[in-house]
Length: 166
Image: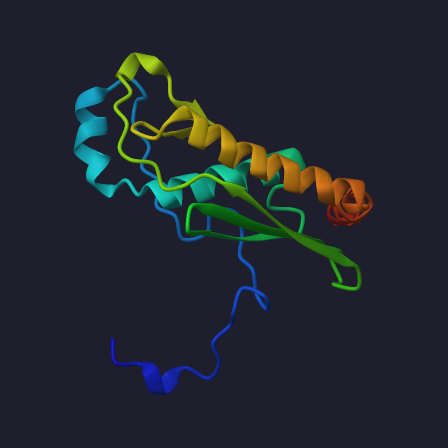
């Protein structure tokens, strides 16, 4: 766009993570409508899909949502899916963040039929092997459990209480 001179600072993931699913394009269609699934299939990106599955599983397991400060950064590199997740208090005084990885690999296109019900964490993921989807989901759950075991539940509970009071 020619706006390089407008950039004052580049924020790296270590400095500024994002909301779960931020930047991913989702198209809602009937799960069994193969004609429409084929039509929008050109928009499908296997890496993005696996990142979204991991992120959504992380948020769901934390029982998070729009009212609690939870952020992520996910990247696929050399067959490894890296998920960094964090939780913060509303005033930013308390936080925790961890990173985990799982071997997944970018799967080759795999043909699932429309009757295979390939939906996971609210994402229809045709043409991605179920084993890759489950590995991404398990990564999100494992990272959430790690943070919960380190005290994230207390941070999130206080954030929820403060939000409910307002």
